[in-house]
Amino acid sequence: MLIREFVAEDWSQVWPIVEEVILAGETFPFDPAMTTDVAYGIWADAPPGRTVVAVDGERVLGTAKMGTNRPGPGAHVSTASFMVAADARGRGVGTALCRDALAWARQRGYAGMQFNAVVESNRSAVELYRREGFEVVGTVPGAFRHPTLGRVGLHVMYQEF
Image 1: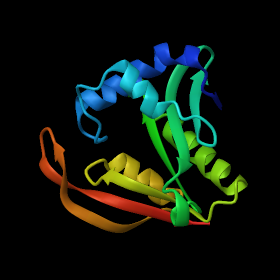
Image 2: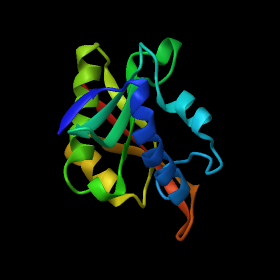
Image 3: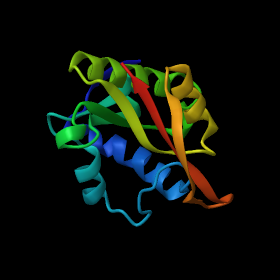
């Protein structure tokens, strides 16, 4: 598996991953009615942000976007988001993408990385982030409407560098 910069031609493989995740409604607070054009505008970050893909040969297994969490006085903290194709989960793709994002943020001198909305029922993501050094610094109770579990909390997770 190789992690490389996203190029526009990757969207034909990235969009099905993004669409699958948002339609499932279990892990991302994105509108399920989101169109491919709107999703592209949100996911394909221009510099100074960065979007990458994890590929196996020509196949995109997952994708990540990263950048500054907040402008101005909060610009010293980074953020990132990750999506992995359903049939590629459990193979280390998410871990590799997370480590790549952390390395990128450290290289650019950020003071830490913050995840603003990790669905508490997304145990695999929460465990992955904890293994990589993040901690839950707060949870907004009932802030996410899960399709089968009802309202569940959204964790704010942070790692200081």
